Length: 396
Image (cartoon, rainbow, N blue to C red; front, side, top):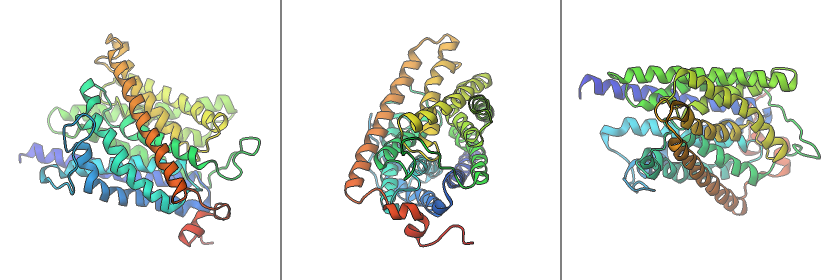
């Protein structure tokens, strides 16, 4: 192996380590946005998402996603062990864990831990790898020219739409809707803010790492992706802050934190294909849309999503993927490319959304009527930490 090859492998591994640290970011966001009596349960779910995900993705998930050239399915090879590709195995493992973790926040504070573990295993083993193969494994969407560079749809929308199915099937937390929509504030916005900063940092592995190389001219591509990623996050945060300031009379902290994440999710599909100015526009659009999406899901659909995961990951992931069709400097509508790319983007968003949401509905319905999906009313009122794990996160 030459020096450039070794450098590229090192880059992928470092980027994967940054993405791994995003698990801590998700854990802090979800812990901060939920109540103190359930923090340990949230941490445990995030911890096991990565632990179970690492094992099952190594055993079978990676080969389903990358092991063959079928239009809809890779290969069914157990225990992936090709030594020249283990860096990519690690990088994709941390991506798979991200898709699973998104769901835990939307179903927080009322889901049975044992049942959640079964879901976490299945999304990492089946749901994520199969649709991921369609785009990144040489499947039918990649053949059509669908562009999702780092996973606005492949990772984030898959997690977001599965989260929507889970939150809908399990129902709202006690006291959320009793004639009106009641806010159930999170217990620690400091943790929530820390989590967003960690996620923002981790995204500099998530998006630039997806270049899968940094040697030679790849370094210029990586630098562009770092800039577009950062600008979209900043624009998303600023846009959300101003929207909430105008709508609520005060700039809302929790919404603004989600605005930064919306910008990050939105730019992930096209971070390599848009200009810095286009990245700002995508971030602004995502930051605006996330506010109205959270309000709509909460107040109109009355689906209880404690952390806004469906809006941040599902909705803005879909929107960001569609916006590639407008803002891509090569083939986008705003750059004279016509509507061909936009049409392919829409097809990918709809097909993967239907896959993740449809399988999520089936899986959570089956789990509801077999293992049981929800804790008892007493357990929910007293807290999952004590009842599911036998300890409190805050021992005063």
